[in-house]
Length: 170
Image (tube, rainbow, N blue to C red; front, top):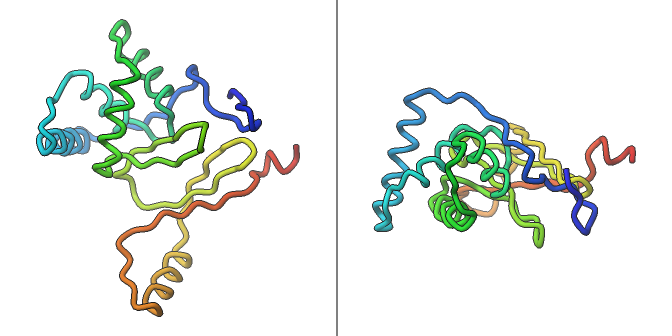
């Protein structure tokens, strides 16, 4: 990991995205959803965009656009996909809730496949490590609070910031 000016670790382009095997049906449904997103926006379904979406569907971790480019270059050796195409596609996918992101301010964003089961994040302020978690009690408490305020929850994002175990020892 590279350290940025705030001494926060941020993945360099050599680091990879953890991959997961999805079923052919999951892949087909995600690709069809992607085609619909493009169709609704009057955009073309290109081979470059398909390669980007396939890499995202197969990811099981948070990634930067640079990580994604590295994966694409390894997976499709000799086939170049420009960073501008990756950024534009990620923006499009984020608007369609196909990917979600966590902003690290000037350091950029980390993305993840947005069609995974609901979860929240703990983020280390020192190294930037992201830990996903779920907690039924916390979910129930949010529902209770919303009900007390006559509020209907349509979604939420929770980020708990602090220091991971490794950084606490440093």
